[in-house]
Image (tube, rainbow, N blue to C red; front, side, top):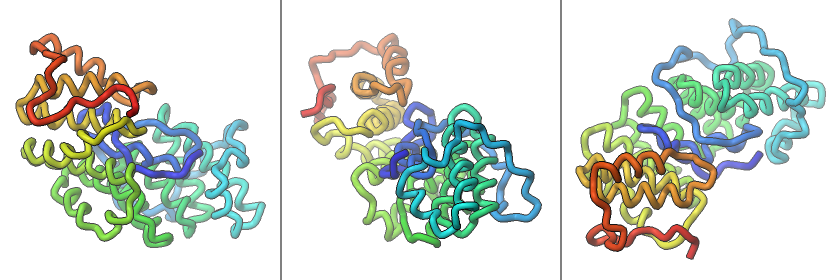
Length: 292
């Protein structure tokens, strides 16, 4: 498990943008969430007494698999309590991609035992985001932030606002004082979500402008595939399919872990438009597929 940097983009999805570091800290695995619409858990806190019984812990959900920094946050619980909390957090990470509802159940079980620890509330929020329970995700990530003060999940929170059909509220998070504290990857992930919010509002040119400088920056970075994919989406929405196809191709070239469906998108556009690979889009430089 690694600590978060981005709330990064589910760039392979049509709408989402926040996944890169979105779920890295409290979970044992990472990937790009594709969250469905809707929020069956809207308004529910993590610590309600009416909570359903905890799911059974699989043998492979071992406490020692938890990130060291997360384990350190659990030390104040005492060994008898820290162990099941840690195992539920590990289980939440294990199931995050294949069964987000079960991941959320494990995260809630951890919160039932330790609701005042930021990393636990964060785990509930991120699992809820993956499960499409966006109101719950917002409530839990806000609770985690009140406890530890970190803005690291601003992009996930903004994308949850989009999931609730409130892109204008997502854009307001760009003015959050914590945005200035984000590292480079987390900032890129927030820009991806904000660009998507502009597209939600029918403002594709503004969506392009939000990502233009970041996309044109030299070199390949861990989040480049997601960023370039989002930029291609914005270009396509702005009526620039040829430019979009080039950036989909570039995203596919660096997307070694298949975070996105950029290759498929590029092929679809290639069938519809003629590409002149030797010519970069006017006023732009096409990205290199290799780190500079």
